[in-house]
Amino acid sequence: MKQLLLFLFCLFVCLGALLIGPTGFLWPSKFSHLIIWEIRAPRILLAAICGAALASSGTALQAICKNPLVDPYLIGLSAGGALGCALAVAFFPFLPVPLAAFLGALLAAFLTYTLAYVQGGESRLKLILAGVVVSAFLMAIVSLIKFLLDPHRLSEIVFWMMGTFALTRWETVKQTVPFMLSGIIILFLLRHRLNVLSLPEEEVRTLGVSVAKERGLIILAVALTVGATVAAAGIIGWVGLMVPHIVRMLLGPENEKVLPGSLWLGAAIMVSADTLARSITTMDLPVGILTALVGAPFFVYLLGKTSRDWS
Image (cartoon, rainbow, N blue to C red; front, side):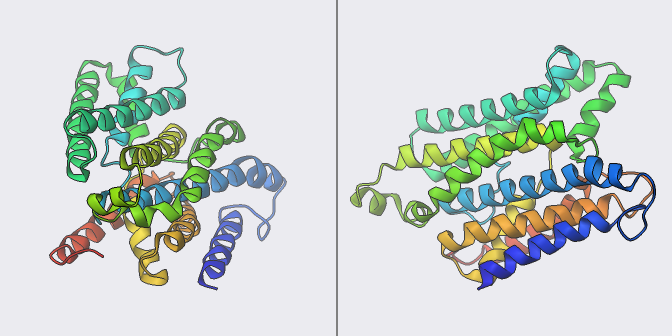
């Protein structure tokens, strides 16, 4: 029943977002059809799928890492996407920025998992630390590129790293959504395994589960979803951290319920944030700024909760 309510809430938010703006069904003009179906509709659809991708990825990572403070960007995906964008703008102008960001995010995920595996394999702590190391290293390269880049071209990188759906068109949806949906489907099919992988590793092995293989498959799916999100809209943080916790408060700790619920709530929250971002000022405020303003206090709240064991 609660899953159905979350779905209906998501549907209500998406349909309501179509009506909000300087023109629409309630305030028609001769350009209403063009604005709603060619500009607003693809933007809302992409925001919804990006929100679902980030939230489901956060659910999966928090489960396999058994850490409530993990989000999809901890394993270096945001840094990889930013590096891909910076390289495309600075040195490879013939390479589409979304494609470059996607490849950079996949590279970051590969480096993180490989580093963790080489250093001891399947430890959750080593995976997290490897992500921090890879992220710091890649962001240092991005900073170097920004330092060397012409100021006029630097603005492209800065705008991309803020996270925005302002430039979304149907072509953007066609290029990135299939990758996001592929990763989401993999995570959805593996939702029953998340509870098993969140157990102590000794217990998981006694059940005959290949920890490295299944964790690697989940990380690959996360890289696919988050990498495509970075390719589509830039760096939008905190959604993957906040949404799974909110859903656990509503549905309980079972991941086979939390992950589908995170899909609907993540989509609704992202669409709501983007609608607010394009409505509160005459300029299109990057949605990544709004999610950071909300996410940072939420992270402080979670830090206070981690003094107790997370179950």
